[in-house]
Amino acid sequence: MKLSVIVPVYNTENYLDKCLKSILNQSYQNIEVIIINDGSTDNSEEIINNYKEQYPDKIISINEENHGQAYSRNKGLEIASGKLISFVDSDDYIEPDMFKKMIDVLESENSDMVICDMYYEKHSKKEKVSGTDFENIYESIVSVCNKIFKKTIINNQKFIENMWYEDYNFFVNICLKNPKYSLCQEPLYTYNIHDNSTMNNNNSLKNLDIIIATEDIISKTEDTDIKDTLIVNHILLDAINRVQMQKNKDKKNVINKLNIYIHKNIKNIFQTKVYKKSSFKKKIILVLNFYRLSLISKVLLKIKRSVNI
View 1 (cartoon, helix red, strand yellow):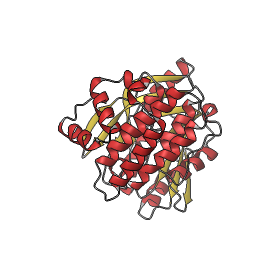
View 2 (tube, helix red, strand yellow):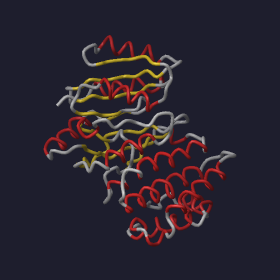
View 3 (cartoon, helix red, strand yellow):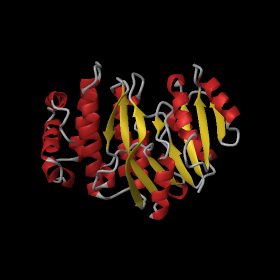
View 4 (spheres, helix red, strand yellow):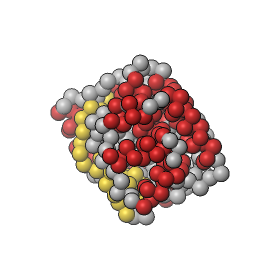
């Protein structure tokens, strides 16, 4: 099956060559690479053009004004002609057999999507991160980059634009379609954590976008367990911990607003299924955050990074 690989690019000249090389040197070669240059002001366009000259039959490139990553991904989805869809961020890179291994699993199990493990790389040090160790798909890593989707399961789903948490919203909306998924338990995608990456971004206010993203999702389901899982895992745990680690004058206000939203929707953390089945260490963090003691959570997580949450 043909795979369309969508690569949004914005000012990633220092990483783009390694990214594109890792895609074009894949053992699985039935691919088209759709590169959306999102108004880059560095040398990214020149790098893209050089690769397009070398691989004219594989690369489709489009230059746009700067609209953001979600817009670029949506543009890529409009163009994609493959029956399979993959997303690779232009500052990341992938293992040489990623596509082959994942597509082999997807085809053998006749799945709608396949998920792999990842590496997080920071200052050339790599740490394996499991993208496949979960009981509930709604508790999994929401990045679209460690996944391959059948185009039929995406259908008309779009990324929400001009907001953060577009991956989260897109992926969970796909999950609401109850797709059959397979797991490829190898770290095949490397997420590059650098000063300009989303994971290191210090913009506290943009974390409030998760409320809008969540409201869009839960408006489409009446399943209380799904709603609780999203709010507990992705807001009470991930978003609050992320903001608490930042150095930003807005973070106290942002955490307060996130807490208001959490308490509006969850009256008793102890009664939720997601809390009941959590590990003891995770329960500690959840309770501290629920009772507005996330500063203590921050200290615990800094002292003991081995806390398994």
